[in-house]
Image 1 (tube, helix red, strand yellow):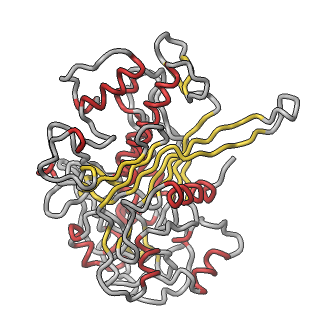
Image 2: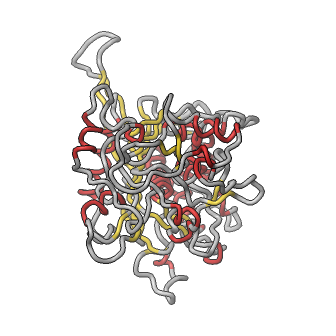
Length: 456
């Protein structure tokens, strides 16, 4: 039907052609993350008769987001006119909700090109049966999915995390896996070692990059787990994610912090540094955030759907993602499955229509041009420090104001005086005015001003 590389290529092309320069990283100085939702539609080939006629597949990007930032707890606002979480995955999902709002408006107006059709219950709608949605991210989600075993003598497409950064993750507030450039150079993406990895017989393009073996050409080998005082249970947890016979010497570390009340990380050296399977919040620069990690949010969407509480009042069933595709980066299939589905298997007592979905998880071999590793490789020993882009871009397949660029949770260019103005509220805002515009569009009713923000 589709491949991971096809999804990644479609998203990268959309990023390059449909998104303007504004909000994108400054060349050779900044990097960012990319996420998107792709609509996949099965179209029957009417030229062939019979019930077994082949089907054609059309793919379209319906929402996209970039970003690496998350505001601290002290900057949150009860009015709901600021974006707390501007990580690419969250921006893409919010943009996807805008797209769903618009499509529901088309359905209520009896437009045939809507993705929704009337449900069996009067007044409710459901997704057309020939459609599915694929979520793409250029990097593994921060949090539990980023706790990946690091194998001895492996060739990494991106550089491992340094121990200094792991002990002080607040230096980079984005929660990304990759190490600062002054600690360890990224591997040359055009080197013979990397080419050999990608062309090795028997390994599909883009699969298992972090499990290919060879000599690591630069940087010291992390310490062996033999001297890290691992318990039998801790050792089994980490080595269970590694290929058979491979020696786990460390783990890629996430800057996301365990939520209060969780057991917490052990902080032991080597592979036992993290506890896996825990809920985490995104890191902040000295100011703790209240935003859950992207791994936790994706796991929640896989149970509750991506539509949000407001749209669920108008839908017969939740809108689930059928697949998740990750771009070229440090990656573990086992870690992704644990973070997105494995932790939720014991969830029960859900309302009718909700459930833990068996989402398909794949990795692409295509690297995002503005990823940290790609930018680092291009700039070589260029002057200045490589930093995450401060802006976030949201794009949605809607006719009215499809594009929005924000910084620090507000539309880019907003001044302190203009924060309370209507113009300072971006298209993804939680403000009641924005919600009521959507509600009136296809229900004819207004939600009360006291309608809880978390439901809006």
